[in-house]
Length: 615
Image (cartoon, rainbow, N blue to C red; front, side):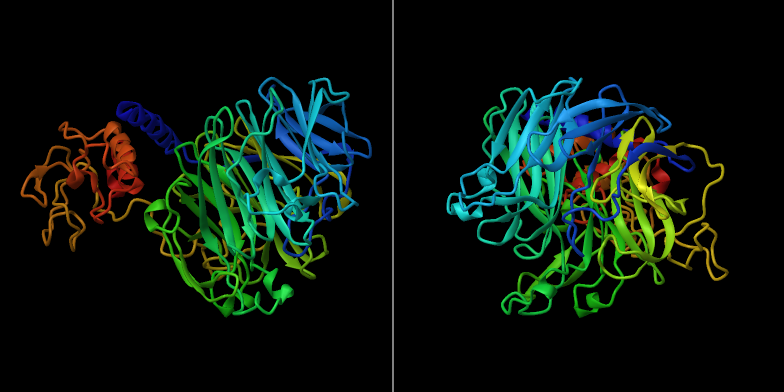
């Protein structure tokens, strides 16, 4: 078992190495008008701080085409597009099993799966209200349909009044991993309260799989992504217990969930005793909006959203700013060691605003003073990059769908798998808009999404952002830090613009903590591992004295005499399994912080990739 675990970690390490290559600088952009006519700027179920359900789902089909699933009265139309976004076909029709549209996904064999629902107007709490239907690639009537009443993610002590009465009232998402499908949605329960629900089925048998029970009370937004073989990562925004962006990572076996981990990486401020006094207008404002979460292919995930930077009453007047957190969702997210990104925020949260919390790994990406960020969205690439899109302007009110007083345009930025900005915020289009509450889709080096324009909310366009490695025509930075930017992407007279705010520390620690350099087991004034010395030797094989008086090579975790990717794999295997994995602790603590963590493994990978100058 020990060897199996280590080689599993080695596979993760190779993903990390891959994600560090090729920066993205330039792009090719296109907006293609389709024959679809839908207003998706003001969508059903959307409230000032809650997600709704877009009438257009978007996904990648097995032939590599970008597909739209357009809701209709009795059927769902599948629209396939080419690489440039032009429509190839729109003649596949899925007959709706139930009237309320949720979303559509497809599996590796080309079958479509539609999530639909119906509102229960009766008091029968056992009645099914959420459904999954399977269709042939040619469409038509469902091959099979299964239903659920919302009890799939309830604890044994929850009564039937916690079942689903009104489905999708604050959004819905779905994903398929191998032969397992997961649906994550918001709902109103029979007790009048609102929460999320998770439903997992086997797509071959259509049997519901046993869950471990997860409820995010007053859940405003819902995301679901595959996170490995038969594994999923769920993300929710709740305003009660916990008052936070919350994660739920699960591994699924033949009968149900085998392993899971819950976490609360990012909290929201609230006025003290607001919940106790039932001040719902105050409670329902989290001073934050969820973009989404993406898998980086190396065992970590990136959470992106906007929020007021403070966990104090200052949040009431602060503009929400864009941020990212990168972490291991199976780690303890209340600990700093779980995070790749750096940065902390502390203050009061909890349902009554009297709980002291600290959030780690918070890296702020913008500091706009004259505009707001709306509809933030995120998508990951095959090589571990993070592409963030958002609308920028000035709203004439809080409700998503109200007119902009000023629309600056649709912007995007690109980060690497460590959260470093490799392309600052740049203008995609002065008129294009995003598909609300629905994440973009990455296909073969391009990002796709559907949307209206600022002047036309009837016609639907397919937008394409093609990523390239060329440095030509690189747009100006528009992060807001160091000077505001005009809508054409040019800077004002007062500033060049940094791409982020905060401490700017790269994941992995201090500059001089290079794997392969010699040092003792403690941190030191010069961060080289040699207390008080000014040596900056970074060569593999140089020796130092550890805490026991024994010599070691920094980064040589397995004691082989060389520093390579297997040392990083061994460190990953060691974390959480200390009693089973033997490791040279002095050598493994690469950054000298006294803790053996993922950051040490990442430093080794950078060193083995030849990036010794980074440390």
